[in-house]
Image 1 (cartoon, one colour):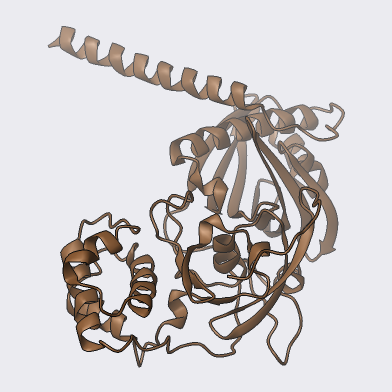
Image 2 (tube, one colour):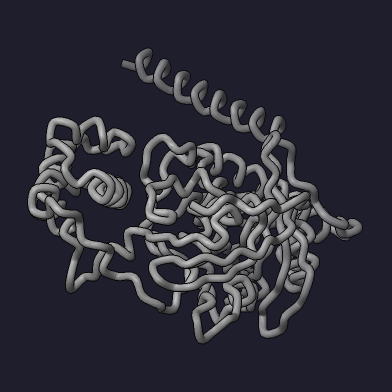
Length: 405
């Protein structure tokens, strides 16, 4: 790999321009200095074949080739590969003409769940390109840098040994490296190619035509019911004013009204020493006096990303009203490493604080300049207390059932 160029002092969140070639396609992008290469490949170029596991360089899932040598993409910053030639698993072979390693993995059932497969393929390619005469008995040690969670090592060893025997003079080169358009996961945008020099970042920062949420299970899926003292009519006044409503959400801030229900803004989240700042856009897709639905997407300055669908429904309840908040959030990057349970607890606490701010504003109090996100200690303490109360309630119910029996 080329020697990383000195960057000098770079402020947090400051973008650095980097150019490299990936699978035969020249790429130019601007990224914060601390964005990892794995996040840049997956989130900014849409090359999701590079899987992210431990993010500590241990599991080997993110193995790629940098200037012909295997490297952990999670241990490299994108700005370090300026001028480098990168090959990911997408460049190894085509669906209609797979690389011999890909064919062998299928033939010997070296796939299992498939999560480790890209890392093994790229690590195996590196091994056979440098040591084509590797002995079968040495393969377990040589491939130990990638961890298979399905413990399917025998099929993997058989596949690599098969290719080594079939190509004693050297493994064929990657067969799917050519200039093409790459599209990031954040909503569309092409990379810089020999005929189009527009950076990826410029496209990703443009307002998308629509926000499409990923399929599958979200990282966070919570429903929070809150009782408000304000009437539904009073709450409707807050729901009708999107900037006012946004000021009630902890850590959120609208920065620009883009028209047609689109807004640009930012959100801050702090969990102890982890501080995240998302910049993105939101679209109000449904809006009435008692219901609002919006979708949003944003990127953290550290390379993480979030997409969400939030629905608020208000209905009469006693002398006041009840507000239900449903949130489905999809996270990528370092923030996705938080456990689902913790992320759900944090989200519930934030929506509870949001409901209180909406209630106070609806009752005529001065709108908050900006509701600060709750501190990590208070969030965790509240979550632990809630769990303790739930356990205590279940324990008392079980004791009552035993006594009744």
